[in-house]
Image (cartoon, rainbow, N blue to C red; front, side):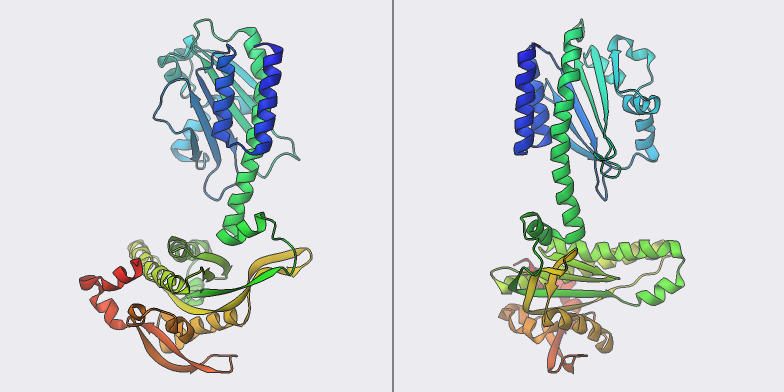
Length: 419
C-alpha cells in the first residue's frame, strides 16, 4: 500500500472516529479500503477491554466471505472456567505474558502450535496471521480497560509482504484509537444507565447538568421495601447478605424496566422508581404491570432459593401519583439527578403502611382515582389512614384478593395489564 493510500485511510479513520461511526463499521470500512488498495485481508478481529457490570470486553469481526458469526460481540469474565482455558491458549495471552506487541505466524505451521483458533484459521484457507497488542498508558486506561487487541489474516499463498506488514503497523493504531474513542462513549452511556437510571442518564448526557435545573412533572411513583430483610440479614452469614439483596433487587428492577419504568434510586433494600408519560392512565397501568410481574419473579426466585436452603422473602410496594421536581439536586461538586417533593415522601410512607395493614401492595387514592373503570375494579379499599408525617388522612387501595384467587383460571387481570 502506497504512502498516499495510507494517509488517505488514516484521514478516513480520523474523520469517522470524530463523527462517532460504530466500531463494527469502522472495522468493515478499514478492511474494505485495505483490500481495495491491494492489501488482501481475509479476516480482521479487534477486541477491546471495557467497563461493564457483566461483560469484560467487546469484540468486532470482519471477513471477506459470508459468515454466520456476528460482526460485534461481548464476552464475560475470562478469570475461570472454559473461558479462562480458552484465553490462556490464545495468542493474545501469550503476547501479554511475554511482553510482545506484535506476533506474525505462518499458518502452515499451525498444526505444531497449541494456540486456540490458529488451526481452525489454517483449515479455512488463511495463510498468514498478524496480531497486535496495543497497551494504554496510565492516563489512557479506564480501570481494567487497558488494552486493545487485533489480529489480521490473508489467504494469499505468499502471505503478507514486508511492505504490507509495515502498512498495518502504521494503520492499525489509528483504527485502534477510533475504536477506543467509540468504546469510551459506549462506556459512559452504559455506566450512566447502570448508576443513574435510563432516563436520568440520557438527561445528563444531553447536557442537563446544571445545579438546581429541574422540571415539574406528573409521575407515578413506586417505592418498594423488602419484607423482614433486617431480621434475615442478621440470621445469615455475612457472605450471604449481598447475594440475598442482589437476588431480590434483580426481581424488582427487571419488572420495572420490563414495564417501561425508570429506577431512580436504590436505598438500602428499597427501590424508588417512576412511570410517566403523556397518558397518566397508561403510566398507572404500567406500574400495576410491573407490580404483577414482580410477584411472578419473586415466586420463581423463592422457589429456587427454597430448594437451595436459602431464606426467602417478598416486598411491600407503594404506588402514588403526583407532581415532582425532576432534575439536578445537591451541592456544586456532588449532584444527584432524581425526583424530590411531597409526593416522594408520601409514597415511601404508603409502602411503610403496608406492614401495618398486612398488604403487599398499597396504592394511594390519587393513583386509584386516575385509573380507568376497568382498572379500578381490580382494586379495593383497605380503609382510611393518616400517614406518618402527612397531615391529611386518605383512602388506600390494594389488589382485590379475588384477583389472586381467580387469576389462574380467568387471566382477566393480565389481559387488562397487557392493554
